Length: 199
Image (cartoon, rainbow, N blue to C red):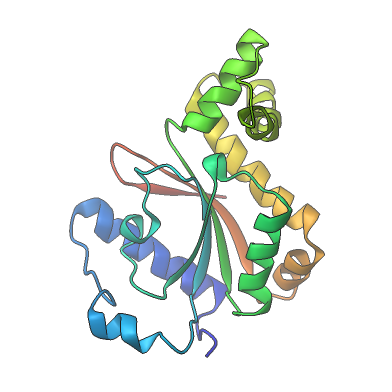
């Protein structure tokens, strides 16, 4: 049961939901027991959101979405890896998702850790080092572009993750070229609940 939304319509739906949530007027549509049960046989989410695992950014709340609306992929700092890319490709190839949003957020702890690593030349150790190493290029890019804050690096990281999706996945790049898919970056403001879509 494929979604009937175009990429632009899916993005407009997300933006409208985000504005309702920011304003404190969520509709909480498709959150009933009946709505949940209706999806038992299949799903047709209108967007895949690749976001951070941070507990302060629950995607369905941030976008005022319900059961079956979002295909959510979460890692600290929305860091990509082979299985994450495969998960995103599954959303597009198998579920016909027309929109991918890479969602960063202000005061991101993972980006902060990468910034600290750059500034102190020390790594956090354990598997955290691998996480930080995947974010460091975005922090360096932000600094070279004149960025001075963690939030500048957050925005740069969202933009570069969008580019990574295109570069690392011919499947996603071709879907976007054909007009079936749109890939965008965005940043969620923890304090205000506003979502800035990056151009």
